[in-house]
Image (cartoon, rainbow, N blue to C red):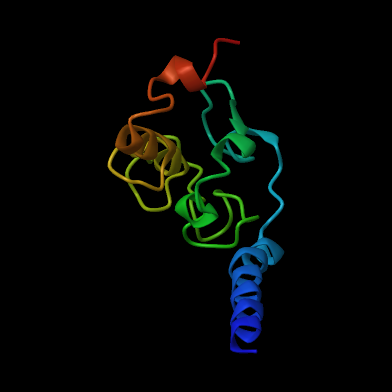
Length: 127
C-alpha cells in the first residue's frame, strides 16, 4: 500500500514539475524582423532577421527583462528613445541590441556565450 501511494505521489510530482511550466509557456513567433521603431530619426543599417525558435532555450526574461514576453523593446518606458545619436542611455533603442556589456542585449549575450553574430554585417546584411 505504501509503495503504491509513494509511486502515485512521485508520478503526480513529476507531472506537475514537467507539465505545469508548459501551460504557462508563451507561444513566440518563429521568425521576425527587428527594425527601428516608427519615427526613429536616422536608419543606416538593414533590418535584422531574428528566429525565436533558434533562441527557444533562453528564458524570455533574458531579453524581455522589463516587461511581458510579448512587449516590444521600443514600447513606452523601455527602449523608446528615437534619437539615433542616443547610444548610451537606458532608453536607447540602439543600446538594447548592441550593448557589449549587458547580457540582455544581442551582442552582449553572444559575446558572453561565445556564439552567435557580433559583427555588423553578420546581423545587418547588405541591402
